[in-house]
Image 1 (cartoon, helix red, strand yellow):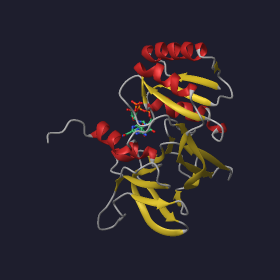
Image 2: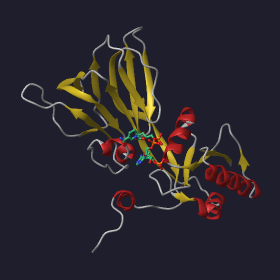
Image 3: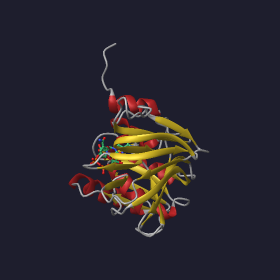
Image 4: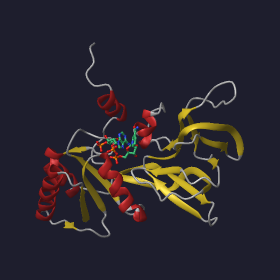
Length: 268
Ligand code: NAP
């Protein structure tokens, strides 16, 4: 089995990654950079986001495993003191995996009418600053609302605990095949009106937005990246054909993870 160990630049992650690579080689695994069967990330959820984009061209082949060097994350099932257990699980690997939906963002640019597709693991946002963002929002070709405000955030189920949650979106069980649209500071008064809450659409639906085509001051983000700013004619958001797969050696209850990350100790 070919394994990549992908880490962030934090000193602890560098140390843990070197230790893990040595343990893997000892057990006869090939530790490689190209064409891996498994990518093990060492760092945080952000590190897994980077690894996802690095290996996004081979999602049908690769499975991910996340080792966390800080607190337990949403994409990271293993702690840095569990390396022996992880290596043992890899030795007994029989291709077990769990996969989750991704977001396809099709951007039609106004300058040359080309369409570029971006793939997001967490979310894509569209924001405008300092001017107010004005855009019609269509769901499956039907006009839904005219949005005015700071921006919009469209997220995957696994991304629902990230930016989406900060802007009032719901936390979704990642097994659901859906995407969510959440508003970022919408203007709601007697003149302008949006739904004012996040919506979740199903796998057969899509969302189109039409920002002002000549404006250059829209900023788009895809996970932790920002594509170069260009005038945008339209963006279509839908569930991607591709999915991300994780090598799943043990089960972690999703709602326990949510509780642990956001609620913590409670008095009974
Ligand atoms: P960052 O600003 O350094 O970290 C963002 C935080 O979000 C980190 O604590 C990260 O966890 C956590 N995170 C990432 N994915 C998550 C998920 N699916 N569920 C719950 N928490 C998650 O940025 P970054 O590390 O480059 O990560 C990029 C992500 O940050 C974006 O995709 C976006 O979701 C999020 N973000 C959020 C806001 C906001 O809430 N206002 C603003 C900008 C970006 P780790 O510490 O484990 O890495």
